[in-house]
Length: 79
Image (cartoon, rainbow, N blue to C red; front, side, top):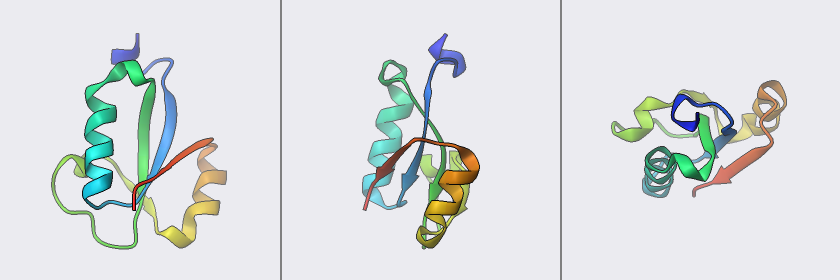
């Protein structure tokens, strides 16, 4: 079921640099972790690569608003 995104915990990643790319790659390659990235918060433009698969939901300053609007309970800070 996890391969279809069911029973996965939604998360937001704050940051979009090399650390965020490594984190995203780990999460997407290991469905057993139980996480699904719903989007990124980033102040700089997201470079091409695995992070292109996820929407940029706002900037660092938008964190509280985005978390409230999406209802996501888990945030990974990759800075």
